[in-house]
Image (cartoon, rainbow, N blue to C red; front, side, top):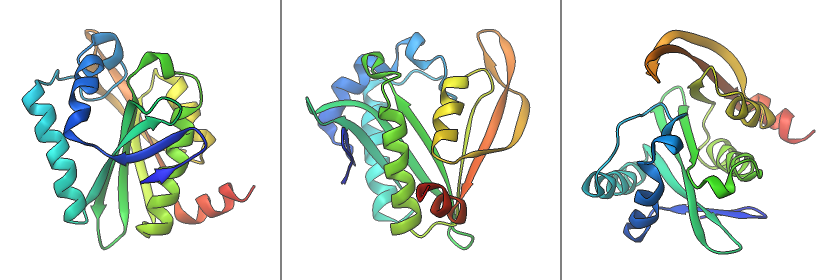
Amino acid sequence: MLEGPNIILRGLELTDVDELMKHWNNPEHRRNILNKTPQSREEEVEWIKYGWKIRSEGKGHIFGIIHKENNLYIGHLELEIKDQISKRGSLGIVIFNTEYWNRGFGTESMRLIIEYAFDVLNLHSIELELFADHPQAQRCYEKVGFKVSGNLREAYLKDGSYVDSIVMDLLKSEWRFFKNQ
């Protein structure tokens, strides 16, 4: 469990499925998520169990983002260790409860998971990908030190058109410098 001023990051539990299902398959909530496929309840239960498995194998973590004030599950982070030798990870985040958008919870969650990735898991770098037409997400990532490292042209079909994605990354050395400013 990781704790910040307003949120807690904790492993997902089967009791989280109802809140997840309430938001996850809403098309508006999924608009800026790279994985567009709606999920059944059974698939979400399997995804939570997958999170337990990758954690036990040392291959990653899936954390629920919990709002401390009301103990509500508002989103999640998935950190996958892509390369154990090079100590490279990939990260994804979603705040799926719209009542908690644009309130700093994504940024706070990112700071906690980045510190965990570099200081506890000893990763060397973290990468992520986002839609090029999602400036709010890009700003959130830049606030915590991520830099654009490239783009993938027409990488995803979104709303009937192919759109570019942006690849961003953060090095451990940059994070140390960035967090001490």
